[in-house]
Structures are given as structure tokens and as C-alpha cells.
Amino acid sequence: MNFRIALIALGAAASGLALPAAAQEWYAAGSIGYVLQNDSSNSGATGAFATGNGAPVIPFGTAIAAGTPYGWETEFDNGYALSGEFGARYANGFRSGVELVYSKAEVDTHSGVNVAGTVIDGVDAAVLTGSATQLGATVGQVVALPDGDELESTSLFANLYYDFNRDGLISPYVGAGLGYSDVSVTYRPSGVGIIGDSESKFAYQLKAGATWSVSERIDLYGEAAYRATEDVELQNQLFPGTLNIENTQTVLSVGARYRFGS
Image 1 (cartoon, rainbow, N blue to C red):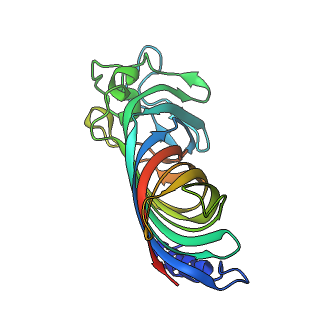
Image 2 (cartoon, rainbow, N blue to C red):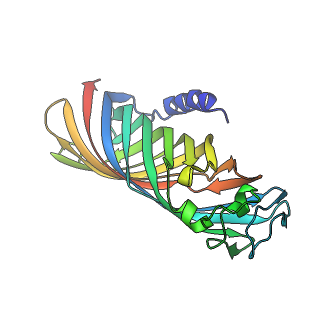
């Protein structure tokens, strides 16, 4: 689905979150978060192509059939997230909102490149480039050096929360949201372009946190959120094939909420 269309659809869906009770109070919130991006077991299938010079393990010109499975592991560094939300509180303890989130995490390393179940980290990297001349560096050595490799997500969620002990100084809450994410992935280890594209995917999140009411209008809050999208399927730029990339993360955030009143 086109991401712009998804934004419009989610805006309409968020309007439908209004519970039978009328909005008691409107609010706007913003937060900054620490992203624990989970590692990705990338997997895909090749198109038909002939290998470069990976002799003596894989001779030059070895035919790889279309549909051959391949993949590798990607480990991410921790990243950051920024979010803004506009919503409403209801007299029955529920709260709903529309949240825009941006997150980014850089790649720490790639490893375990395999084709048809055989790990080829020790084979000369020319095997995947189509080069007849060996490069003098193995596949494992090349992919272990990220060069601007990263995963970015821009997401829009329609959220529903329930606040416990809402009249108290500290109010715990739980929440969940559905939405869409535009996920951009860059894999170019050692400057070799492999993945560089984006795709919009269905996303969801689960939240738990606590609100501290510091004044009549201002709240501070801290929360933990688990966010995930469907696997992102992108075209391989190095050799024919597609690659599915996992995108799940845990985000620890702190923020502030301003309540406008009814």
C-alpha cells in the first residue's frame, strides 16, 4: 500500500477510536526514545545468475538456479526514536491517539552469508560480484564492515490506552496500536551496495508505562514499547534476487504530555 494512502486511512481509523463516551480532554505529547533494534535473520531467494571467481570452492561461472535460498545475519547497534502524538482522554479511563514515530538504528555487523544452506564466508568475495578476478578478501571479511548500513522506520499508529489510577500522582497505563511503517534499509558493507530501498508495511505496537502529573495541564511519562512490522522485502542490487529483512524493536522512551482541557 502506498504510504501516503496509508496515512490518510490511519487518520480516518484514529477518528473511529472515539469510544462511546465523548472526549473529556484533548492532549498533545512528544517523546524521545532509546531503540533496542533486534537482529535480523535476512532470507531470500535468488534469480538465475552465474558466480564470479570463488575458486577453488566455487569456480567462476557456476550457475545458480532461480529460487535458490540465501541469507545472512545482521546485528544492529542501539539507536534512537522520536515521536509525537495527538489524542483524547475519556471519562471511563480510556485514551486514544494518533502517533507519528521515527526511529533509526545502524548496523554493527553482518555475518554467516549462506547460499542453498552452505555458509560461504570463507570464499573470495568475487563469487558474488560476478568478477572473473578474485578480490583478495573473503565474503565474511567484506560483509563484516558496515559502511553507512542502517534501518530507518517512519510510522503512523492509531493507539488505544487505558490509564489506571488516573486521579493519582502516578498513573500506570497500558496501550496498543496499529499502523503502517515506511521502512528504509541500507546494506552496503565495505562500500558494496546490496540493499538500498524502502517499503511500506503493516505495523503494530504494545506499550506499558506510567504518567506523573506535575501540574494541572502537564504530565511527564516513561514507557516501554515493542514495535514490529511485517518483514520488508527488497530487491538485491548485487545479484538477482529478493531479500526479506526482519524489523522488530523495543523502545524505552521518556516524554511530556500537555492537556488542553475539554
